[in-house]
Image 1 (cartoon, rainbow, N blue to C red):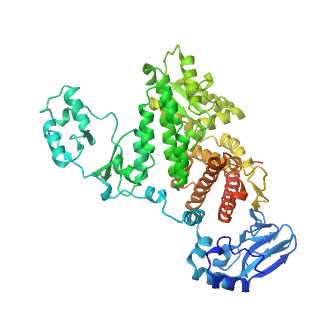
Image 2: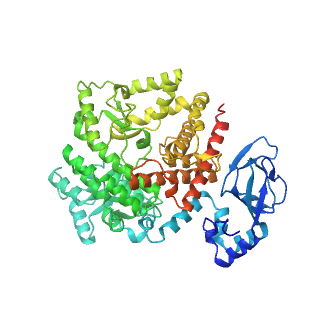
Image 3: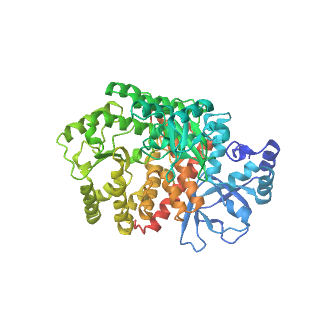
Length: 598
């Protein structure tokens, strides 16, 4: 019987040799004809069943609710092994061959081998983390990225009174051997002062050495801060996004220290911050084009070093933002930039695009703005984006299309009209706009528009139901929902997994008026509000990460969007099937939640 049963597939690869021999000795092979029951609700299970061939359907005790279908290599009913009772009916849809592991042996193996038990009791997240640990088998960059901020990473804070003179502050910094200090007015937030700040105050602002710190101009924006226990990688993201060199670490309103860029780069040597600085310093279009060519190399290097998918998304999205924002500043006249807001849409708006994709953007104009050369300036911007590696959007969702450039009031009216008409194109337009993320110009123009959109859609269950049809209709690439569907060109995970997940989460967020645009942030917000359970939220998030990672690997290694099943390991295929089942379950839940009639 051993040639028929694969001991190398998870989780049986976690067993030692004596445990495997016991398993093979006790294993039974069962044949069940089509339409015959395998397990009935209420019975005590004989053991764990593993399909060798055929398809099995799981239904509720009453038979009205369909829960899942199982194909080759699927295991069931795991829960019954631990509970002692089968809760649902399992019926063969066609002639089936099943392996049966007797329940006493199964429970004994779980007790003896924790890794084996975790496979069955653990969530998709735990299984995926275990797979990543086995796949890496070495120290990778991920271990550094998952390092949390502690006292050893911090520069002790130099805190001064607002009455301290600039001369005294300079001497104190020299004596402490640091390049910055913090002071706080009697009513207000902490202010950061660097050597450059003092130099500008004395030379450019005309202040005297005896002037107090309180005479310094306030910071243009609040200090960027983190807390002890946050990830060092979070600091890198903030430094990249805000183009700063220091992050203040605070706990309970008290300053614990400063985290400097040099300290972070000492642990994280991928040159992402260097690339960002080069983007910032690019003073013409040719220089920016040269820098942008290195973006794909950075993504490839980070992926090869094992960086966590969620971190990779955030970092590369921040770099993408910087490139697009710099292109905007090089092509749009300075007097206009503070009266318009450039937003990115689609995967870029959700901060889920690692490699460059089509231009998906829009522009919000301040009401009353007169821009005679608008068409010429935006055409130049679009052309530069194309040179930077962002091709035109096939659907013309970009600022070179006047339909995606409006004054703030016109955007609000367009939202109202789209909600009123509710034609299919209107619903697609609303869904696209809901992912908008501001990257350049007056970013304050976007939040009022977002709130208007959320308010307009939150109580329109009928529209959300119509929008949900697309998420429910997409077919997951599973044959009879049991095994990975063979496609000669590979699996299209964007169509078969990501779209339903991303779009479904987006609609739930619109219903709940969640302002986040990133899918992972939306899932976390929905869980926090009690709209998704903790376990289901975790499974959705892990399925999303797996789809992104497998698709990205295919893009980097073979230049293909599709994933070839033959190139996946047994563990990856198992995780992918599990993740696609999660999406299928999510689609069924969405259909019930939004009362979608199919």
